[in-house]
Length: 257
Image (tube, rainbow, N blue to C red; front, side, top):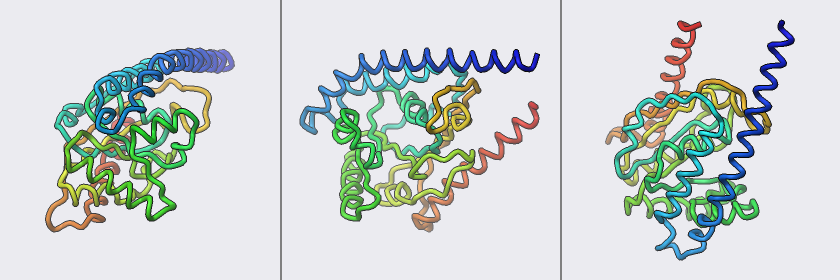
C-alpha cells in the first residue's frame, strides 16, 4: 500500500510538471513576440506600455494557473495604491509569476540581478523592461539606484524587489539588503511586504518536478519609515514583519495537524 501511494504521488508530480511545462511553453510563445516588440521601442514608449503590461500579466497569471496549485491570497487590496515598493521573500523561480500575478496590469518595474540580463533573448527583455543591478560593480549599483529613483520620483508604478538578493530554501528569509529601505527613505514611497509561503517546497531551485502543496500569499499593509528611523532600522522592521508571519503560519499549521 505504501509503495502504491508513493507511485501515485510520483505519477501526479510527473503529470503536473509535464503539463505545466507544456502550458508555460505555449503561453511563452504567445506572449514573447509582442513583449519583445515593445521592448525594442524607445524608453518613453516602452515603459508602462499597456500592451506589454497586458501580455506580461497574462503570462504571470497563466503560469500560476499552469501549476494547478491551490492558492490563497490575503491582503491583495493593499497593492491597489498607485506607487509603492513591493518586497517579497525569494525561494523559487515561481516567486516571479506569483508576485506578478498579484499586480495584473498595474504599472511596475522589477529590479533584476545582472547575470539574468546575459541570458539570450530573455536578457534583452530584462535590459529594456527592468532595472538591472550589478552587485559587484559600485558604479553600476549607483546607476541602478539613480534609474530607480527617477522611476519612483515620477510615480510611474510599483517597484518590485527581492531584498535577500537570491533564492533561499530555509523557509526563513535571509537578512535583507537595505537598498529598498534606503529607497523608501529617499522617495517617501511606502513599502508593501509580500510573504510567499511553501514555494520553496513546491518548486525549489534546479528542481524538475512541481510538487502539490497549497500556496499562501500574504500582502502586508503599506509601511513607511518614521523620522526617527535609519534605513537599517526600517529594513529590520520590515524583516521582522516576515518573521512574525512565519511564526503565525507555523502555529496555524500546527493546530491543523
